[in-house]
Image 1: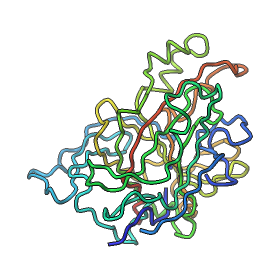
Image 2 (image 1 turned 90 degrees about the horizontal axis):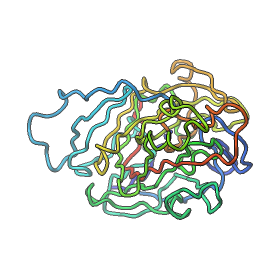
Image 3 (image 1 turned 90 degrees about the vertical axis):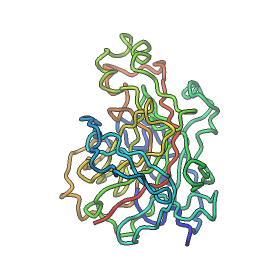
Length: 355
């Protein structure tokens, strides 16, 4: 078997010269929730949205086997469906995993051979805006903790497969550099994957409770109401849960129209932390749009079907996909206190399932 750490070309989840994360090196104001990057950490290759998550329903029990799962093969137990996105718990994580047919999927990150471990995350790049200035004074750890990792790490709870682990940070108040860090794959043009070919996205992940910090709605209201916003604005922005955003993009440029598809999905850390989960995102749950100078125009899957995907970005998000600054009337006050969501997440795989 051959080690396959990200051998496809796809994934939300950047690069020298691109801007898209609320606040690039110029520090300009950015209302969009799509990341722009400065200080990108380049990692050498190693062989081997804002759709609000609503309509939460229990996942169908009909897909759960009535017999005991095979201990030598991964199985899943459905947990919940939120906004069309299915979340299931992985049973026997990392057991009997096999490389999918090359024509059926594209892996942004995946480990299908545990014999070689702790490799550099090939084809991924990342950024970290977080530093020792007052802007970031309230993050819980020293700035370097949030760096893009130089190697993958094995996970004993998933048959020691290599995982990509990072604490992702999102600002609550200010849109400048609102995604404190994140990662992406930006070299997918050569794969010839169009938006129309993406049937679904599969994300295997675990929210690690030890370093995950999500402010409660009550805590946000105590800090920002009524001095900055009304209580209903807090309720609109946040619900005290983990949100992760995956954005597929054509260019990742703010200076001209860029076609994109994204999903902003919810994980309830109160009930799902420290479990390996499989998140299945059908194409029908993606939000298709164009963005020009941080202004979005709704589009459709059919309109973007023939457009090639260059890359994908992964970041932490708020429920609504932006910040309180979008709600504050009048001039922004630089002394507005900042609050952060910190999501400690391990990824086992991120794959595009193709038509």
